[in-house]
Amino acid sequence: MGRMARTMELAGSSWRVLKADKELIILPVVSLLATLAVAASFLIPLLDNCTTGTGGQAATCDLATTDYVLLGVMYVALAFITIFFNAALVHAANQRMSGGDPTVGSAIRGALLRVHRIFPWALVSATVSLILRAIEERAGVLGRIVAAIAGVAWALVTFLVIPVLVIEDLGVGAAVKRSGAMFKRTWGENMAAQIGFGLLGFLLVLPGIAVVVFGFTAGGTTAVILVAIGVAWILLVSMVLAALNGIFQTALYRYASGNPTPAFPDAMMASAFTPKRGGRANPMMPRGFGG
Image (cartoon, rainbow, N blue to C red; front, top):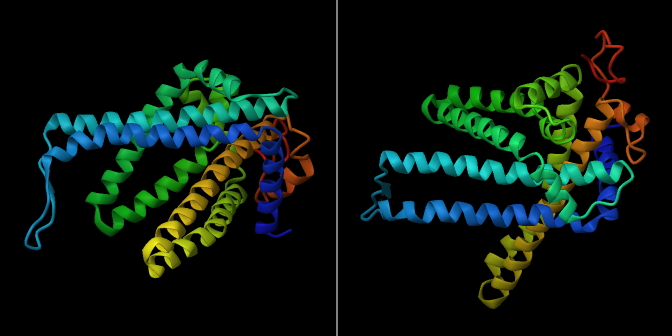
């Protein structure tokens, strides 16, 4: 089975889980709204220190040390919001896969029980993001290449950190180690799956992008309507994919932990996440995962 066909099969299984609890799509929506509100609350005051460029000059911002501290706090706050609602989604997905009937309330309560794990992970995530951005901006082309490679490696190693934090209640260090161990022997196939989900998202937003572009060329009232429709479609696809990704993370975690769910049969997961040839399998882990 091809990579894209596997991705579609996994996405379809994730979609069936989401259909059983449609209200969970509210979590990515609230996450987006909270992100926009927090970003605006930090950025709008900082804009007072910026001047609009005139006469062909670029706009400049005269930021004090305290402003940079506020930007750092903003990074952490935004990371916390994203991780918190992802954790809520993972909690709800795990509840459904365990035979329960999650709600938005139960999902948020589950995340609140792990705030002592989520906040330190938000600090780590924000710090890593800032470091990678600094490397990218200050080291030229080489820096961008290094930052891109490091970013991909970090995303792979930490892909299962949130399910580990939520379900096992481990500290950040132990969660990163466990997540890395789960991915150590399947990095190639897991990367392919993540790229597949990204490609799926890109294909789904293309109609929205086309409508927006056509709207800009149409002009007048038609342009406003078409642009609004296109943007709404792109946002809807983004929210649904965010929910599907959280469900997929949970299913992959359960499979890696030897506790699969009927919605994601072993045969499907094993075909999508097989170890590299020639590797020595760890008998303590399910097929496709090494220790």
